Length: 181
Image (cartoon, rainbow, N blue to C red; front, side, top):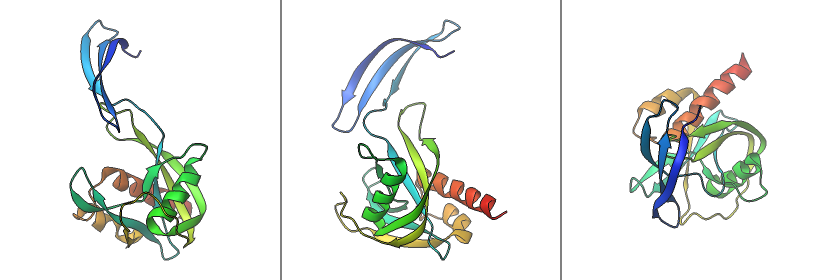
């Protein structure tokens, strides 16, 4: 049984998110106050694109949270009336200059569910072709191709630190292995 929300209030707000404080009562009578960033706005997608050489497509992009450039998978928000697959294909075109003939929804993933209501939807993209769309990136992104058979080396390196990208690549590696068995 879910805890009952006794009270909630916004304690901070920015243009991107708000922080909410919630007073909870658990089924055993215990009461606690939690802070969270509730789900707000549109959904997000992250794309694991695999080319015909069995390389995954990464982009080197500035990350404001760490104030450095990092390798990540293409990702972004889902526009209104857009499916996860359509959004993934659009983001791939905007960030990597590639479109995909085949898009396979993999799963929804949460990031820090004890504190955030945000989730992201992972999509596997194959059958890649050259196609560029103008997106909202402030600068062109460097596209990096990484062999799928060397993902373990990427995972233990300092080149890729973002958990969403690591989780999505791991899931794609498992699904691709299963499809070849």
